[in-house]
Length: 138
View (tube, rainbow, N blue to C red):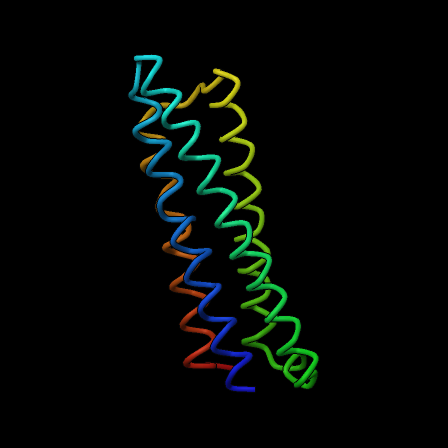
């Protein structure tokens, strides 16, 4: 079980690295006006999204493996709340994909400022997820 947890955490860190950095790229992409810069951001965003999606998939795979080893955990409140936060994180991930597609198509309609606020969402989810997993308050 410790090996499964370790890989779960390693891939979670990979996923979150992407979730922190991709919206930051959106901030800079929204400010870019030259075609070379725009194309550079499109490539960076696409590659980063692929890496963070692998991190997300592996995080979920190892999370399910942990649940398969200890199915009784589904009966505790902290894990249920954590899973809701993970579902929100998956929705955020999908929203990042949609925003990336809008940038790729040249249809971004949001400001740098909006992306700066958008960039804070994974930090809040990370705080909640880690506190629930470590402290197990209920």
